[in-house]
Image (cartoon, rainbow, N blue to C red):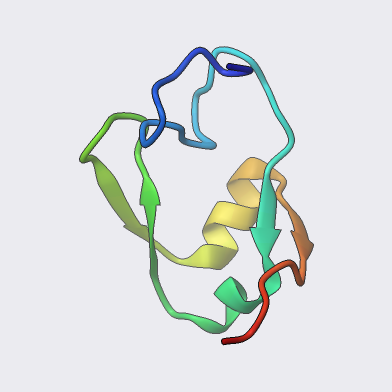
Length: 66
C-alpha cells in the first residue's frame, strides 16, 4: 500500500516514493544475488555490495537461521 506497486513488483530502484531500504547482513557474504528489477518477473543479478551502495541500504542481521 505504501508504494502503490503490486506484491512481487517492488524494487529498491526507481520507486515513485522513496522508502528506506533494509538489507540482510548475510547477503553481503554472496558474490551475486537476484533482486527485483521493478516489474514482476524481472530479476537483476547483482553484487550485493553494489545494491547496498546504490540504494544507501541500512544493513542489519534480521533473518533467523533455520
